[in-house]
Length: 306
Image 1 (cartoon, rainbow, N blue to C red):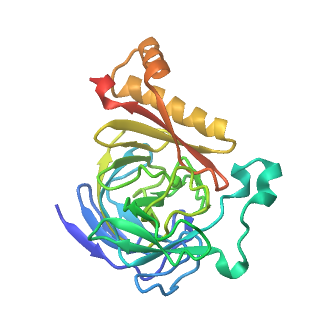
Image 2: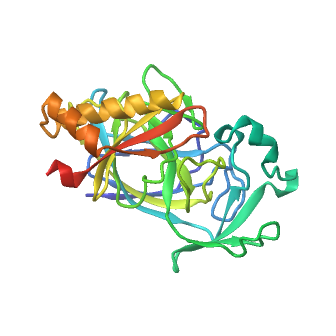
């Protein structure tokens, strides 16, 4: 199948029915680049407006409303040696009376800088003068924070948030080798991606991962006539569903409902069996708990599906 090399010349801060930048077909692979959340490129130069600028949209031939777009994240590679994070946990994830005890940084010290080493597979905190962490090092764990398809009814939804179409879900499980499924709402699906993170903890509770520009490689497929309600995914060990909403219990409801449907339509569980299995085997991961819509991930181990 063809591989397309695409270098973007402009970006979008909404996911919607924008003019496509490239037409691709079922089975095609795309290698492209993304800027970081502030619009900075491989040279750390801001080349577009901040706010999770998206590369795309990619028009997938044959994708129609009611189909499912399958996206395989073949490779996510940080494309420069330095990334950045914020330094303080978001006030909405601590008790209100603790907010004033958070380490509110001065305006010129809001961001921490990290060194990314693709060869060693590490990220290291740089110049940590205001903390005893020292040159703290973690394993590199690239993930895509914001991606999805154009929503229905001509909507253009901010890349700050998420919904049925995907968007800014910030789930650390959207990483190398994962397969993601999106409901298709418009002809061509119109697939966008961006907001690469070198590492991120659950919830993106400081409002960022380690933000970085990426080179991304992905492959698309179209499942004709297969209608799903919310983004789905799978890796070697799990199938999972994403619910995006606020409050968090509504996001959990969406993810749990989508998993119950998936078990019955694709894995041929009867309704009672699906409910029993979920009750004892379900696992939940927290995606984003910082943005306007929160993300909850509902997971089932593949070992119990066999």
